[in-house]
Amino acid sequence: MKFFEKILIANRGEIAIRVMRACRELDIETVAIYSDADKNALHVKYADEAFHVGEAHPSKSYLNMDRIIDIAHKSGSEGIHPGYGFLAENHRFAGLCEKEGIIFIGPSARTIEMMGSKLGSKHMMESEGVPVLPYTPNGVTSADKAMDIAEQIGYPVIVKASAGGGGIGMQIVEEPAGLQNAIEKGMRTAKSAFGDPTVFLEKYLVKPRHIEFQILADAHGNRIHLFDRECSIQRRHQKLVEEAPCPIMTPELRDQMAASALTVAKVSGYTNAGTVEFLYSDGKYYFMEMNTRLQVEHTITEMITGVDIVHKQLGIAAGEDLPYTQDDISIRGHAIECRINAENPLNNFTADPGKIIRYRSPGGPGVRVDSGIHMGYAIPPNYDSMIAKLCAWHTTRYGVIKRMQRAISEYVILGVKTTLPLHYAIMNNSEYIAGNTHTHFLQEEHITKTLERYQRDEEARMHDAGSGYLHQNL
Image (cartoon, rainbow, N blue to C red):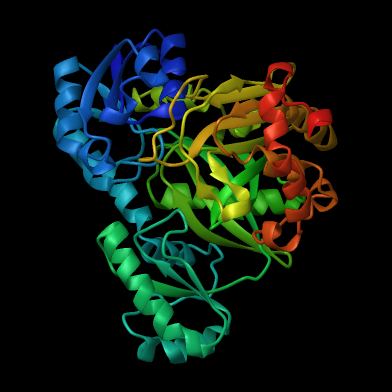
């Protein structure tokens, strides 16, 4: 594939580097953008060219559509890869790229807008026979109108922003007394975060699993799935640990869910890489939403299928046919991803930006680290707290858990608090090892005491960092 000569990556950190690596393998030149806070960032050094995009605040830099388009033109970039976050699911940006004659490496602006509406997409998929949870199809604007509907749905219910994602504005309501405040707060948050105050109610499942399917679709009507991922371990409705495939998946359930995922792709006219997300509880699954972009956890799907998803994104955007049929794709082993965030898990996951004074990444068979950090790097406070992704692969699930335990024990990141101790506690938790996870796993499995022991040894790890962050030192 040699359609693109040069593309701009409208993102930063590890995902920008991930895309640039794929481009280097395909002899495509890359253009980085950077804010004031990122002038010394690794993705800037890795790219073939780099352009200053603006001030540290995202609205002045990585969300500045006009400036990014201007840089694309000045650099001679034929396409823009948005990564994830920032403008990745912004239909206005995708439309602006189309208007300016720049290829947006992702789905069309129309599809992004269509699937960006949680209400609209749920209604559409329900009409196509894809299972959905009971919900308010027209949204709600006041507690008075919602009260009767909530009674019909049955408590608990969850208030969600129609136009948003990432768990922003979600609120669980256990009983009628809390509904009015939740709706009012949800509308304010939705208006502030997404520019659209519309919220809706949905039946809340107490202990569901979060299961998603990776899909690829080209512009010629070819669509395949790359199997499933389990993403149930979350904090504040945002994922922390993902694995592929889902440990409870049966061939029958996989066939049913995959068929639904491909229906979503077909009905929405989807092209490029995307993810269809479901909730699963008591033997039933329900369509939740579609993420119209590359997912953070695409890495583990690549590890179990051998498919380079970013390569395929570029090929599809260049007009190529998918080189596979569904029969060409199979599952090989098991993979886990741990999101490494600069956060303090014992202080409600408060972000902890700062300078990394000691850094050493793990290695060995079946270990992958996607990172944009290094020793001496100052993590800026302006962006998402995820600083690296630690992934492991093995032929069996138990084997990959043991490998991940080992990889975590080798990973040294000192100078800031991180989620590494939490991940080690999860990997050693008997319920996790048994595959008994759900979206409230962290609250219910009571791993805090184990985590506290690891955190108490922070000072010891600081002094002993030269010999490594090893299990025996925890």
